[in-house]
Image 1 (tube, rainbow, N blue to C red):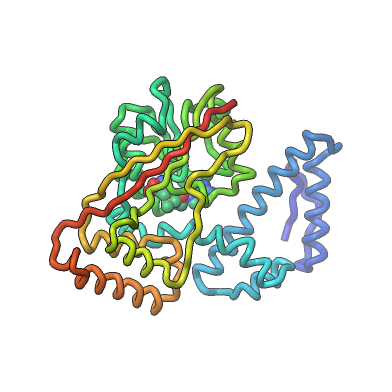
Image 2 (cartoon, rainbow, N blue to C red):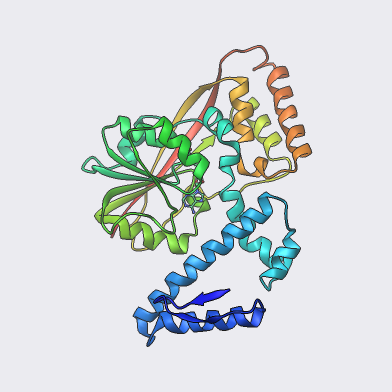
Length: 329
Ligand SMILES: C[S@@+](CC[C@H](N)C(=O)[O-])C[C@H]1O[C@@H](n2cnc3c(N)ncnc32)[C@H](O)[C@@H]1O
């Protein structure tokens, strides 16, 4: 293998030994950080982030193809099995939605139109929908006449988003690396995705792309389980995995104090739509196939036999939409 320094000159030919790779890493680190200082630190951090991104992509490939166990991945990275799962299992789940893109688009609810007036201030024009998925919220933003850019890391979700919401500019990227210039948007909205972000990196990155005084809105749709059949559905969905999400977070500085809004509404759906809603949850996508099939069969059974649902063509799923909005201080 030929190894290159960052300025393109060839340092040496490498054997394949681990020591050689480490030596190359040390030389590249030395080269990139130059004389050190905060500028060297910034460049070094950029290289580390890019390498970490690539390492994560390799872990994802290995896990998706069932080519390596967590034990083997941990060993290759000089970590324990637990260390490797702690580091990457959450990220794999965060990026799993594309595996259920049809269920996602068919089963997930949109958002009430009234949300837009609270999530986006009246004076805003340029809006970023971050972690936009298949565009459930993006569509409403475009319909409200806003100039919308939608950023989504998953290729399959992104392709669906571009096809269903042609009025939005769709970009590959993540909350940790937003592909937009500094101060380029008036508002950022994040629907059902904040809990997947690495917030320590995402907060300064969101602040970077916002214009002075810009806003960040964090939105979740929460099933209203005061309806008994919705409570039974919820218990079934979480019988193996309980997902705890803080739906009223307080984003840290440089953002100011939060303003909150809640809207109760109903999503008109069908039994098939509810089964797709369950199939599109990340913890359901992650289940072993037999367990996943059993859960979906049990959901279908509930929908077919519950006295409030059996035989109904249309079902109104009750939701509470919760929005937290903060302004750049
Ligand atoms: C539950 S979906 C929400 C999608 C859409 N906003 C909606 O309301 O339907 C979460 C989305 O966040 C995306 N995502 C996961 N990790 C992300 C990250 N670090 N940065 C940006 N988006 C991320 C996923 O690919 C997925 O499309």
